[in-house]
Length: 360
Image (cartoon, rainbow, N blue to C red; front, side, top):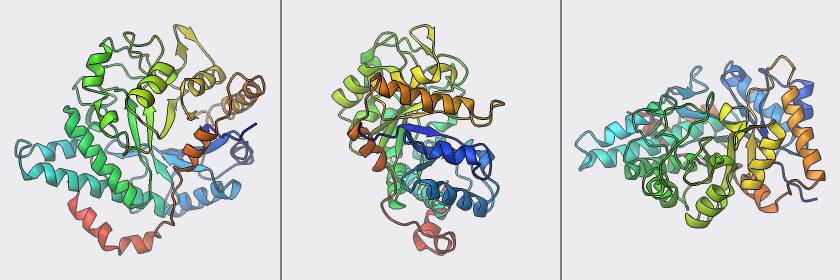
């Protein structure tokens, strides 16, 4: 069978255990995601990342590090980045019709560079950013993580931030397709439902994905149900991922599932499902990679992670899902293509120092 390593998992602590190494070495594991519990200081983070790469050099080390309230590392020299709304507010400082809009795009590029360069200096490959959700005003889970209510402003600021990521050698991830900002429910603990028509969603919340189809490296769909389009959440829907995202909007990059441990990921067409079935459904719907987060810290000692890896391997043997060369290639393309600057070198780099001055 073709090799395809779709699982992104997590580890419990500040260093790898034997169980972590065993899971990371599994042929279906393609990477790991870091959380604040994996952080003590820069030296420890760099050491942990080096341990991961010693298991397998091609493992993708990921983190949710957006700025504002979603920033995993905030001390020991890491810049506290503003929430994305700050860039939208800068855009609107003169009504959005003058120089403030251009200043905001420059500041967003600077933020992307600082974000990526600091992470890469510690061994982190990739961050799940930028957020493309629109700020409708009612979503607590999105809120100030969104750039703006206007899809055009959000798209241009997100593109600017992604350009900054790219300057530091990091790929981008637009989320949460086709839009999580309209619904109030939090898919971590509930199953949000967006009753709008496909036409309305494509004209507004999903518009940035079409405009940025050649700019974004990857996309993460929302654990939201859009019943006017499909009974399944977007991350489990071939219509959303293959028909609309890839077919209609022309996106060619990688697609991640959102965290399969979230409440919104565990119910498909009204039926509660396990991790393996959720992963198989996501992969068959068009996801290239699936995330399972925060299960290594459970009382069972990561039993859910083992369940997923073993279950997915069995499902592959039974041809319930098939490996994809294209999916594996898209995963590998998210790895940085050039070496990172060391932390000390970064601190003296003119581009980095200028970027810090541009942050709002």
